[in-house]
Amino acid sequence: MMKKLLVLLLLVPLLFNARAQELDPGIKFGQQALQADYKVFRDTLRALHGGLYRYKTKKQMDALFAADEAKLTDSLMFREFFSLVSHTASAIEDGHTNVRLPDAVKQFYTNKALLFPFQLRFFGARAYVTCEAHNFPAGTEIISINNVPVNTIKERMFTHMTSDGSTESEKYWKINQADNMFFWMYNMIYGRQQKFNIVYRIANKTSDTTMVAVPFNQLGCVMPNHRDTTLLKTTVTKDGIGIMTVKTFYNDFLKGGQRHFTSFLDSSFNALNARHIDKLVVDIRSNGGGNDGNATLLVSYFINHPFPYFKSLTSTRRVFTVADNPGLGMQQPDKIQFAGKVVILTNGKTFSAAADFSAFMRSNNRAQFVGEETGGGYEGNTSGPRQEIFLPNTGIEVDVPENMYVNDVKPAGHPGRGIIPDYIVMPTVDDYIAQRDVQMAFALKLLSGN
Image (cartoon, rainbow, N blue to C red; front, side, top):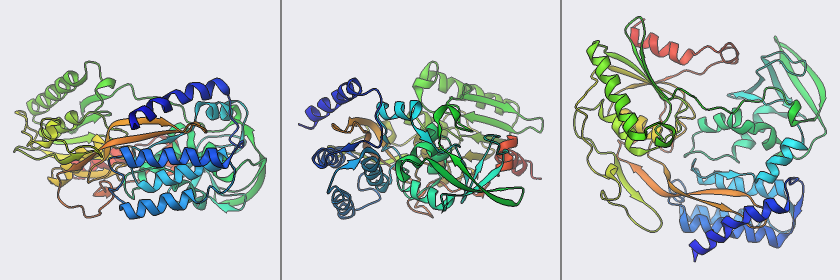
């Protein structure tokens, strides 16, 4: 029955987009339509989400569903209902559970909406304009918007974003870069604003101004959408320190897939050993994960004895065995071994299989970590097959991951978090504007002993 329901839901976006190329998020939907959509959302999560109760008990999730559903007492604007659904999803504490705008709403934001004039970048509790725009110089700090402190705005937005456990590093990445999230999420949560009273600071001088909302094509500091073209690379510095860059474990992004990845690792570690390199930086910043086997393989070059990887793998319908996933068995070390010192660079987009790799290196005390907490959880993730559902009335898209992976690692010092670096190194706004890689610089200095 659930499969039939999902097939029907997959047809919804075709009807939805045929009906409206653009959908104003201020449009209202009736109570019955919203209740029907929320029921599909809730029931699909209960039926298929493999990690629904990883961080919350069933009692807690049932109470959350009931509390959010109880708010559907009247018609709501699309943006209000989206905020409700994204709030529920955020509380699951699973970064693979994504709630996305329908294409029709995205088109409205691109073509017709009037928006806050900047894409801001947050550094902790503070937010900045990171390029020269609308007569604001790069580095201008925004203190408040319409009398609300920016940190209050950020914290409210975070309650509508998903991440693994209680980590916030992935949420910073999303609000700063992913699809220029700030401008549309501000509109979604705070509603349509014609003007903005902005308190800002330039060179320690605080001022205020009023700015009008602008269309998308006049936004300042919009982040370009691009993917790294150099996904795998190994170099050696003049000081004899190796740098291995691994931007993905996803075979579909790699020409030749796993065969290419295996060849890259073999050739890289053979070359490092031939040159007697005994210090290595492994840069997995912005590695969003990919195929488990590639992450396991990379671990095998650093650990010279058999090691466990996944403790368990389950879905709502079955318990998997080693015949289903080799990661459930004992892993063997590679014949090529790197025995030297290792520093791993991580950030908020180090996620999924990349966070698993980090967890095993941390659990085996095989590396020091520099940078930011990983976006992915230390204990494992819920991923694998994902059902993409479309709520039948509003067209909101939801990714529901099916398989819960539990890593076979030592107990975490901070349960429910990512891998927290030994040395937390956060770029400042000046570092960001000047494009200084302070995390890499710190790692190289650490390995050089200076």
